[in-house]
Length: 265
Image 1 (tube, helix red, strand yellow):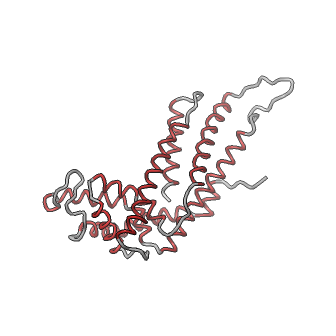
Image 2 (cartoon, rainbow, N blue to C red):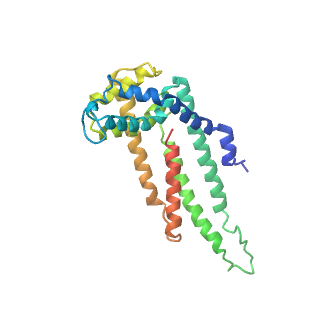
Image 3 (tube, one colour):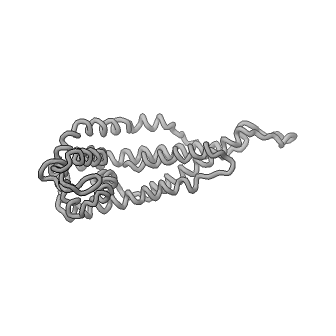
């Protein structure tokens, strides 16, 4: 039988926590610089506010809130902006491989349990009426976990190949959604990205307005839309009449959490 690694063994192999901690530390180290970039006199953000479009000079609080919210949406992006093209590709591939291995190994473990209906109650030819009610509930729960893992596996099979722009594309979806929310026009959105990339000396060789739209903005919004659709489907297929509402709610909550973590890369 193939050796199925535990999740801890896979985590030890890839060490994903080091990357997650680096994201946090890079954000803390650069948040002040990012805030200054977003709020300086050259920033296209001038003229926009979280609630209404008013001058920053008329609302210091509006300016502060806007910069704070946009900075939050750029946390992962800020990390990828500080990496070289080669490292951005390597990190994305590493995290995707980590989550793929986790899903595959957990799926195989769950399937092994479900493939043996006699766990806890091995049958005997002279008594076939034995029923383990506890294991029946466990199997119903495992059945939903199997569905969730199968769904994530199928989603990952359709991922495009990771490249040096993937980390930026995946991480900037909510940022662009937020810019649309405050009614920022397309021209200013592209200018803002160009402004940020220039200030942080982002390593890519195609920094012009059209390439920002085609290589960053459009893929980011497409990925965000697909992620949102995937997560919305979870509550639809994770259902079992044999389980109580509290258990079902928790199953959906955990599956949604897994989906969000996986789609971060």
